[in-house]
Structures are given as structure tokens and as C-alpha cells.
Length: 173
Image 1: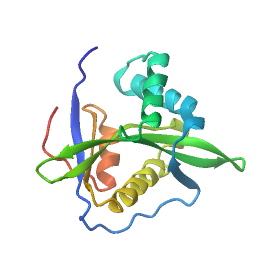
Image 2 (image 1 turned 90 degrees about the vertical axis):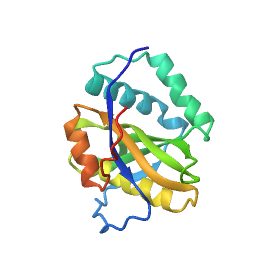
Image 3 (image 1 turned 30 degrees about the horizontal axis):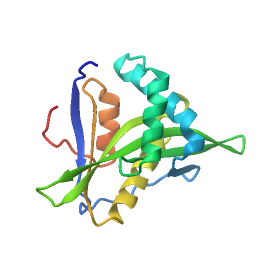
Image 4 (image 1 turned 30 degrees about the vertical axis):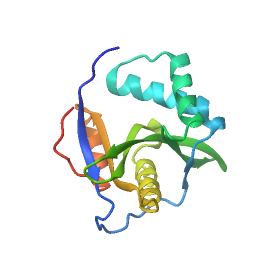
């Protein structure tokens, strides 16, 4: 165990109105399943190494990933696919977990474990995944907002999140 300094960089309430985002047509976002576990583990490990210089235990990470897939009340993963020589390959992932808010009598969706393959960055992969989360959350009357946090020095990620409409929420963890 160790501590990590995080800064919440985004919060979105679902009743906010924004102009629709233009999304690349070559990106498909879908809910992850058991067939994606190897890629989810690799992406999560790469994200931890890149953002926090942490080398995660792969067995523990695999078990933690499977725990989410086994118990939907814990959350879910989305993956983004791009075509590579006419075959889909995974380009990114994110995980959503849930936090009950007594103040709002609703559930915040927390976006975490965000990772986009370096070869696919700046091509709209995160934007497509974010749009899918917003669309999915909008159909659930229990969801009152979407939040995420990022490593405090990951300014590039913070910029991306703000570009999709997440606004700083004023909390520091």
C-alpha cells in the first residue's frame, strides 16, 4: 500500500447542455467482457507505469479486473476499438464505479483506469468513450453526474477531460 496524490479534475452533471461532439466513425465503443481481460490488464498496468511509475502485480490486477466483470454492482469497463487492417483492435479502456450521493439521492459514476494506447492518442478515442459514458448515464435515472480524478501532474489528461466538458469540481483528495 502507498498513497498517491490525486486531483479531481472533472465533474459533469447530466442536465448540462453542450453542443454535440463530432466523433470519429472508425471508433467503436462497447462494454468489455471476459474476452478482453488480457488487454484490460495490460492497459491498466501500462497506465499505472506511465502515470505513477508503479509496477502492478499482474495476478492481483487480473483478479481485480475479473472482480468487476463478475459483479456488475462494482462497476463496468468500456473499451474502444479501432480498425487495424480491417480487423478491430483495442485502442483504449476506462472503468466506471459507483458512488451513492445522499445529497442528490442519486449515483455518481466515477471514471477511472482510463488508458488509450499511445499509437491511438489524439485520434478521438477518449472522446468516443466519454460520449458513450454520457449517453449510457443519461438513460439511467439514478445517475446524477459523472466524475473522475487524474494524477495531479498529468496535465495532458486533465486538458483532454476538460475538452470533453468536464469541469473542475473544487475537491482535492
